Structure formats: C-alpha cells, structure tokens
Amino acid sequence: MKIIALSCTQKRLPSVTDALLEAAVTGLVQEAKDAVIQPIRLIDHRIEMCEAEDTCLDPSVGRCTLEDDFQRVVDLAEGADAMLLAMPVYGGNVPAVLKIFQERLKSFMNAANRPFGNMTVATIVHSRTMLTEPALGALFPWYLRLKNKNVASVCVSQNDHQELAGTAAHDLCVALGRQLGMSLEAKSSPAPSRTVLPLLQSPPRPRCGDPVASRPGA
Ligand SMILES: Cc1cc2nc3c(=O)[nH]c(=O)nc-3n(C[C@H](O)[C@H](O)[C@H](O)COP(=O)(O)O)c2cc1C
Image 1 (tube, rainbow, N blue to C red):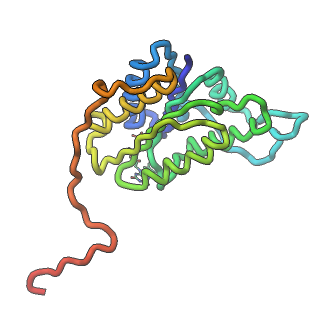
Image 2: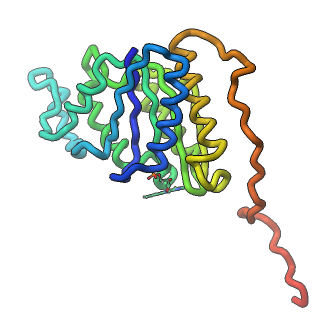
Image 3: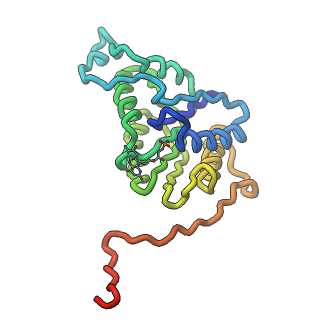
C-alpha cells in the first residue's frame, strides 16, 4: 500500500511541518503494516505558477507545457492509495507552494486518472497563533474536486503547544496517522490502546471585544 507524505512547508531546512508529519507517519505504519511511504516536500521541487493559457485543456495538447519539476512530482504519486498532508498556516490560508501546486493539477481536470485524487487523506494544519481552521477549510474544495475523502484532521497552534514537536500536539499527530492506517485497513480503534492526551490549559489572553479593565487611580 503506497501512501504519500506530502509536506507543504516552505522551509528548506527541517521544519515543524516535517516533525508533525513524521509523527503521523509513525502512527500510520503501526496500523498499516504494508505501508510504503512516499515522502514529497513540495519546496524541494521547482514548480512554476500556472500561466492560465489552458493549453493543457486543448485535446490536441492534453498536458501542461511548462518545463519544470511538476510532472516529476506527479510521477512520485503514481499508484498511491492514500495521503498524509501537513502544512503550516500562511495568512489564514494554504502556503503558496501548495496553492501553486493545486493550480497546476488543473491540467488533469479532463484526464481519467487524477493524480493526488480518488484517495483517502488525513490532514495536519499548524499555526503560530491563529487562523488554523480557515486554512484547513481552504483545503476542502480541492479535496472535493479530486474526490478525496478526508478521514481525520489535526489543527494545532503554538499558542497552546509552545513546543509542537514534543507535546500533546505531537501525540495527536501520531493518533491521526493511526486513524488513517485503521481506515485503510478497515478496522476500528481498540479503545485501550488509544493515545491518552493530557489536557492543556492555555493561559488567558485578551480577546477582541473584552471590556477594557479600569486602571487604578484613573
Ligand atoms: C508568510 C507567513 C504567513 C504566516 N501566517 C500565519 C497566520 O496566518 N497565522 C499563524 O498563526 N501563523 C502564521 N505564520 C506562522 C507559521 O504558521 C508558523 O511559523 C509555522 O510553524 C511554520 O511552519 P514550518 O516550521 O513548517 O515552516 C505565518 C508564517 C509565514 C512565513
């Protein structure tokens, strides 16, 4: 069983995204014994922006004519059954590296075989402080278009988990990987072996609309 581990960080060096994705892969291989992981770091490939010429949709051309690494990345995903996708939040949305890649996949819109489509996926989205959920939501039109089924998602913020790679957020990603593995193997979770997560209480912080505290002596 081939599973894509798609990292959508824009860091050249190992990143939080990669650490969380690795945790999810650890959980996945616990459950899906025959899993063959195909890692893909989008930022390590040269993928140009779609030029919207629509030559790919012309039946006499039938493919994207930009010369870069796009087809190589598509080939890496050949025959995959599932995907683990991990991404940081950029401006409450998906990082540009993923948006550019999504737009290039439009060239397969009329193809019988849609790369990165018709598969089971699980998703990790993380942010520094905020807007994690809208970024996750931004993925769903793409998943729907590709006929992907998202079995589970994890949204984490460094606000609540300062050290993402060594906390409950990390455990949550292991559990996410297990969930994907169990879905692929069509088995349900044995309750006693579920990861037990400690409850974290984030420190109170001011929120928009809070009454302004009166200052002593004012
Ligand atoms: C261009 C840019 C935009 C960002 N936008 C947000 C944001 O909207 N909300 C947020 O909480 N963090 C935001 N961040 C912080 C990243 O989500 C955070 O640093 C993340 O951990 C980076 O993951 P990485 O280590 O894989 O690069 C942004 C970072 C960058 C570089």
